[in-house]
Length: 196
Image 1 (cartoon, rainbow, N blue to C red):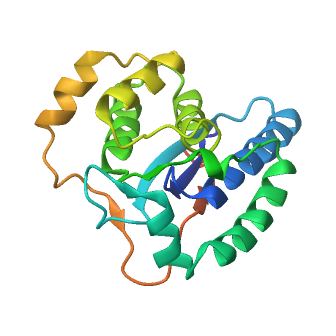
Image 2: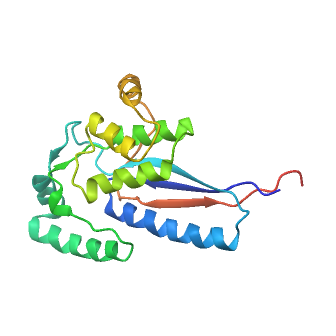
């Protein structure tokens, strides 16, 4: 009997290329499920912080973009390419709607919490986090906002998550950037045959 085909996705919910990559992965998985309907597939989400040093309350998006890209004109050039790529996978990026750049530690905690509980639709939660930030311009650095996003995704998350998150130590494993940006990254493990 075949084991699950496991795909490990390392990403940050404020990385537009990660959102595009998620949609492309969904397309590939749909083709795989069509070709191999009996193959169990597991997608595991792993955290990566593009901006681990941002304060918990986030920072002004305009100032952030100017520091990161050297000015608004350069940011517009980059986001024009990202927006074009997003349209190929039906993502209507609304970069102008984003007012604050969040620290994503709590968003990663939410995904890890939901993934560990094996309840609800984790893919829907991750999709909703991306959408909340990139399409709706919501500040996903706020724990109450994260709980609302999770509820919209029909996740099992309630205010219980907020209470548990407050108690979680900051030592939870989160990949941090220490040089070249490596997100998004997708790794797939071959299904294992058992008993042979």
